[in-house]
Image: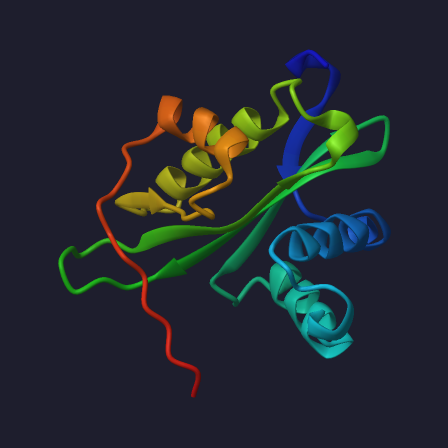
Length: 154
């Protein structure tokens, strides 16, 4: 799929029916499916936040012929090492049928453009270490950070 065949734009209220399956497939990719699936309450609140102007969470969609091909979610936050906010690309997902057509690259470019326009100093994201297909793209567009992530449930 050539980039001219789809557009990248902010998520809109009418996108929910197309967003939800992509969101659920994204979560399933990371093991959040079946007994470990996110509660519907989290899905609803995430969608609400993505559309709420006062929230620091923003969504982008890749769209062709009215159908969503992919999604990206940005989360802005303060930093102790810079004055400008950082933009965290928390979620990026492209439907399997749309992969290989430049959708992920276009979503990454649009996320960077949006973050820059919003005054963020950096855009960063993480992925599973074994997500080799995504990492091939990421290695082309960004610098690999040397970091280890720890998590503590509260």
